[in-house]
Image: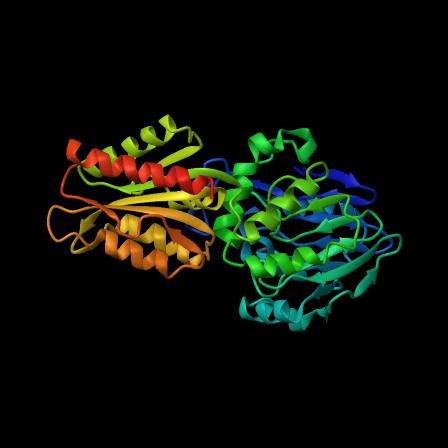
Length: 402
């Protein structure tokens, strides 16, 4: 059964919900699902913008066929070649052999790499600011490489002032029938989804994101139509500002992320003691995570959100506890910058966790280690260590005011 919605003059949302996939890119959990958004313009020429993941192609094709009725599909725009958006591209080429495909030169290469018969159909490699007239609607192409793949482009409908933004401004989460951000409480229901999506999927590519955003300065955008999550028409300025914050690796909020790796509870005890001490000093924006229990994507998202971090870990096999090590390496891979971090190590003998954490953070850009001398305890913390913990808390509080 078809399921679509008109979003503007001559323009339809024909995307699908995915509540079946358990992990996005086989990495990031999807407890509230995800959408694959696609759009159809019915002008003098008919125009499809992106497809969906292959397992959901049946619903997608039903939507197209019902809206086209007896018309052919004239134009296909490929903004992004990742398979969750191009998975049904081969089926579109097969069903609509007369369609003309528009994409970047790199996307053409990717079509060949993924086995789509691009050389058997009509296609144009689009350049920056090239335009395509559909009749009433004129589309303008804006290259956006490395947001977050190299072939990405945005498509701007000059008539409806809609920006088709590929994965930019996308979120995790299902739409539950509500398509636009003004039909829901976006900040309460989707900001955390948007942040977790950005930080884990796009987060490494801050400079390319800023370059792409700069291209939007001179165009009027009345709606943003991303490839995941709600369409934006109320929170456009908010999300552009938020993207500038994330892409520049500027903390959204002053607060403390505490991550601990603990086998038998002693390091965990220190993590929660530090949290309690900070709250009593007036620092209440705190999030504590067990590195062994919490999926990393949530920790990454809060690392992008908060200004300060405390990492406390046991020593394991003469090295850093693997779960903690993995998180720090991921933050380094995602290019996280401009944070202040405190380090606390535990070891029953031959402690090395602190040294390795310090080496990790020292290799990252603009990461200030608040306690370069580190705080170390053996096996478990006792009252003799409390003054050192209190001193570290005071240093963290002072750093909030710098």
